[in-house]
Length: 272
Ligand code: MF3
Ligand code: CO
Ligand code: CO
Image (cartoon, rainbow, N blue to C red; front, side, top):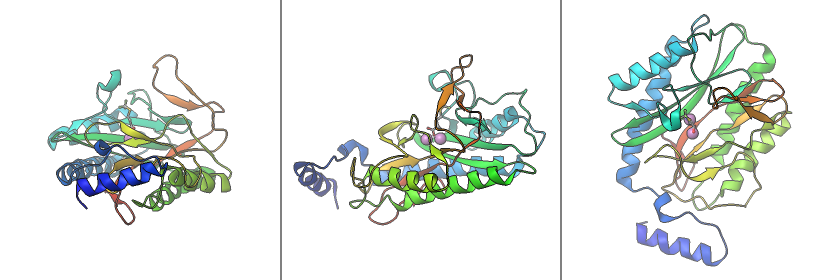
């Protein structure tokens, strides 16, 4: 389908009251090719971290791996100086939900779970993904949280077919699976359009109702990045660094993220 045909189809949906994406949320084939390359480099950055992460290492050393691998391969770490963020990657340990700042004094210990969230600019295009790492001997409750959160991402992706699903279907799938396991879902932060810059429209909530919200359309590029808490969903932002987001109850939180291309079938993962 060319852009003219897509536009006509979107106008039909809109006339029937369906919320639809703006045409600028639907990427061109050239843009998609560029984002795919950025997503591949971003994946390799996370692979480099996965290869080297170990108990006793500091989160600042993770930052150094991300910075070095990215620039050595022609990329730019998108987080560095983003709205004043001081490092190249987010490292969120245990009760940190997201936006943890790598720190030379923060040593990873056995039993820790850490999310490493990298965003890479390559030839002007952007890929964004994160993974959980489990260090040493992790208690089974934390392992379970990490596994359920990964499955939440998978179910979100399964419910993201172009011309079939809406944003509400993604949120509903994630929310119901998390709740079934006794976990809560963070609402204040979510996924987003991505590709030409780090954060684009639309906002992708990880809670929702089936059939509600914006229609997903082939060519959209979004992230899904559920943040799932072991305890309550409530959070606070560190008042000293103004970035670190923590659970209010101090219990653990996990997150996995992919950049995906909406297609007429299940989405293509661009951050593999
Ligand atoms: N990678 C994050 C996301 O998934 C955003 C990073 S915030 C920054 O949206 F400040 F570190 F850049
Ligand atoms: Co991210
Ligand atoms: Co993201």
